[in-house]
Length: 362
Image 1: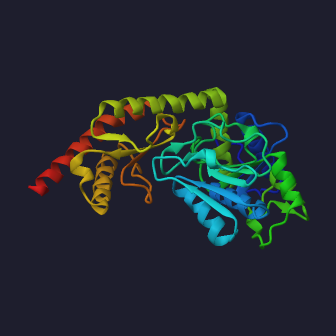
Image 2: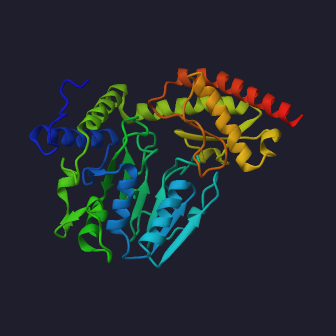
Image 3: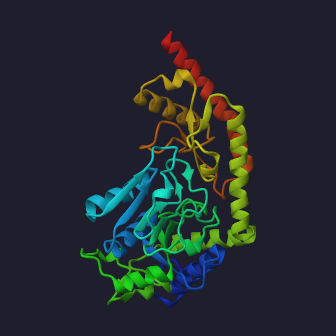
């Protein structure tokens, strides 16, 4: 796999830049991006890509910030507390639900996640996004890209990272800009200083180096080779339609188990909004729900430790800011047979936990 890697070379060398250019072009083709859209590599994973968009593009008009998971709330805090934009409307919902999308005003800039990685709640479609809009849409799509057929004409800024649906190494972020976003970038300068790693333009123009195989800082060429390997695998698997199908099949297997299991349910209340990648589950048994939150978290972590000790499942506890529960990854790199094989172990762990809790209560 590493035979042709450019490890040990500068990313600005001919070999290094060729790798980065290949990375961008393979990603463009796999995602079926419009020819007029730019795609670039930025530092600091999806977080860096989102921050680059917020710091470089916002401030010229009011912002509608949508939040229904931990990361949406993070972008909301940055916009309000760090950028201190005065005209911000925060449209929020509790874990498991979406805010009222009919309230969104597309004469304003709109910031949102597509798939709530920490809540398991995704947007059902892009129909709610206005085609005729004067504001920009800024979409954090990090656990949706490759698993959802995104409506690119409705998205002006889209960000993601390598480690989600394609399972590559983290650290590097990707940003996709529509012509409208590029025009905003070149016609508007925010009132605040922008750190170098977040700058998307240079000398008053879009920084074309970011979108043509360059980088604002030094990327890991080992990670680059890993991502290129993942892209080649995705192409051989059948491209984005095949990746979406793999996610859907994984989710269907898990959903069938949830349907026949009395003690568990989806955190997302509406079927159309249930993520097919970051599937968040809640334990509904009375013996569990009657416990205070710290105790429920302790029980969840005990369950996860049981499975980890058996080598069955790793890191499946819910996100730390979400309600106590489980988060099971069903992305395209997960084999359905492995997912199905885990489920009896999950039931075993639950029974061990339930028996222990009942004995302690007695």
